[in-house]
Image 1 (cartoon, rainbow, N blue to C red):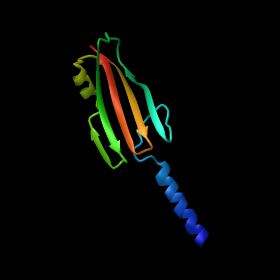
Image 2: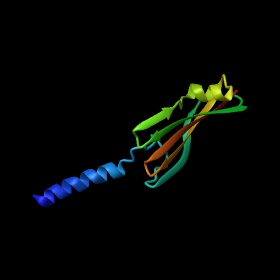
Image 3: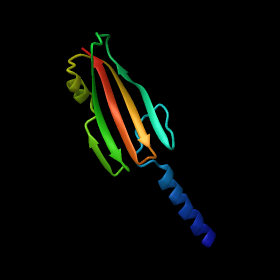
Length: 107
């Protein structure tokens, strides 16, 4: 009985510890202790790439999340009316603190 209870408790603890509560979504590479990766998002019809805009969201423990990491906000922040590319950059530290940055280029 004690062994079964210990197994269940340790499995539950491992699930919580390794779930990465503040993990970012869709990263090209995920590190257990630290992630700092950038990846492609979307490419539209070729336009001049004269401007860049960003938007950011932050998560703490997966319990608190804030920010606006939408493409429209990134375009607005860069003064972009015609979007050419959308990329993203994610950072995660121990599953405790995570950020997602959307990077938009265009004219």
